[in-house]
Length: 331
Image (cartoon, rainbow, N blue to C red; front, side, top):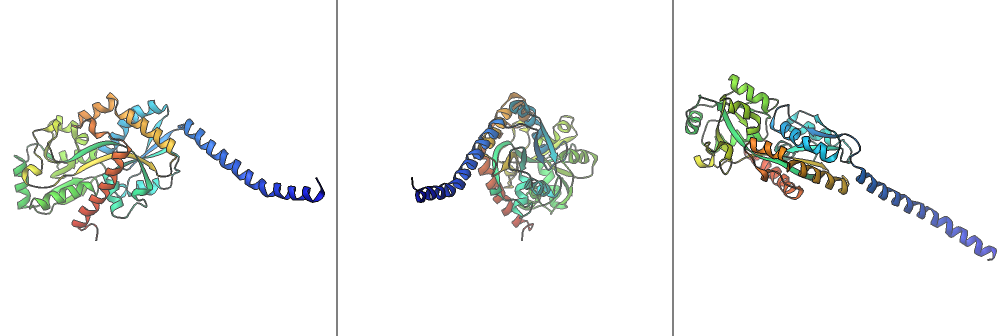
């Protein structure tokens, strides 16, 4: 090899060296990502909720975590971010890494926040994981105050009543407002509380005339004869309280359901997201979680994977946007 050829080869090597190093770096990152997914989870997993203790969202999240800890072989803790009907939780969630160590409990409340353009996140910023409940909204009253569902409606046609809700401009008051509007009743007043647990307590105390709740939020008080479900806002009666009429049976075309499920950041590594989905579905199909569903009048169809849950999230946001516009919450 002459001097000229030697110099030319040296120049080629110098040009190729950065490319080789970059390729090696990419390989290391890819392998590292695979190892990371394989090792997941290696530390405590946080689950972000927006609801107060004792409410349906809080209970659903804790029931999921009971078995998920065992399946994932790692501790899980709740991080509560209350405020704005879910806006504070979304604002917080958008700041955490997309590594699967922070899971968001997503509800119809978050859908309403997104519909109003608040919270700093959109549907496409999330990757759906699994649905935990599909829980119809129920109008509840203190036992003995109203003679029947028809009496409940008739009284509201005479004068407005006060409904207890967990958030304003969200699924609870939207449900009550739409029920009153479609049923030709006086526009009700709303009183917000931190969670379903507190609302149930205040309903018994007489602070409000009625409450928008789910069975899981007032099952104990119902069994004690303190609170009575009076109208179910669903297409069909609920098995657990089959004696309670639906709004549609009464000629009031209103149906609302509190859906609760789980999601992660859209950029979460697929292997990690798939592992979380498999773990949560296994946990929620366990007899412990299924027993919880049965106790609150729901069944195994509440639990669904990412495909079904993802479509429902999108539909829920669009439906909430339409309802909020009709009620004037969105101009």
